[in-house]
Each structure stands twice: as C-alpha cells, then as structure tokens.
Length: 197
Image (tube, rainbow, N blue to C red):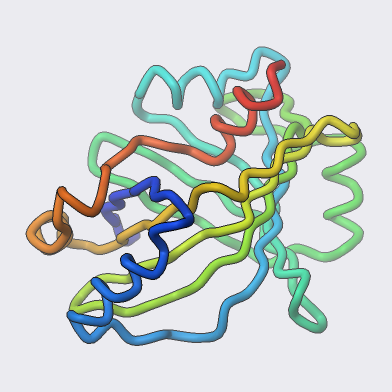
C-alpha cells in the first residue's frame, strides 16, 4: 500500500498560459497525451460519503467507476479512494462490462456505508506532467451530471491543478503562493453542491 499526498489548486482558465509557463520553467515534462476521464460516483441514501468528506472525517472513502471514453477499447475500473489517518491511497481493479451494468442497476454494497447507488457523473479533460519527484495533473472542461437525470453543471471557467507525491514537503516547497491558491476540493462533493440535492 502506497500513501500519497495531494495539493489542489483552483485556477481561472484565463491564467492557464501563465500556469504552463511557470511549470515549464522547472522543466515540467508531459507524461502522456491529454485524455478524457469519466467517472460515476456511488453513495448511500444518506449521502454519508459526501457529508464525511465535507466534515473532514477520517477514515472515509469514495466509490466510483472510471473509464476513459476517448480511448479505443477503454477498460472499466472500480476504484475505492480511502482517506485514513496515515494518508490517502487508492485501490483500483478492472471490472467486466456486465458488472458495470449490474452496479448501475443494483448498486454496490460497502461494509462501511452499506447499500450505495450511482449518484453523480463527472467528466473532464486531463493533462499529465512529471515535475521533479511528483506528478502534476490539469483538469479542464469539468462537467457534472446527476445520474439518470438531465440536471447538469458545466464549469468552463476554472481548471483544477493537482500535485501528487509521496513527499508533501517537495510539493509545498515548489509552488508559489502568489500563483497557486490552495483549495480543499472534491469533484464529487462539488458536484453534489452544484446540482443542489
């Protein structure tokens, strides 16, 4: 099990060029081409994964099914994101299409949260970079949609820049507070709030 640290920054999309110039000054390298990511988040009827995340409780988790629709023959991944006292980590496993359909119809049982059904669809475009000993991702064209509903929200005005590393000091020693505004944001929680339910 490998714990990781994450720092997230909400940046006006108009400042993306300045962000890229700043990263390139430190020889930031692209890891692989930009791709679209689509995830379906699950929660119980009390929305406890949402409320536990908002309250900052630990341990807590999020359940989602992730795919990469822009890629041919994209695999389906069932992912559990866990936030514990020791740190954050993710468990990911490939699932079959029939399991995907079953989970969407019947939900998923989690031993901590009980019966959990699909709640929110989140999609965005992600760019991947390597900078020193940590990874940088940039998410744009962020879209939220209530599952099995026409209720949606499209955020074209901001991007989310995220630094991920096993060493929190390497991240915090890098970013310039005048350029980066650190935020605590979860796309799932943001979607629940934006879609108002």
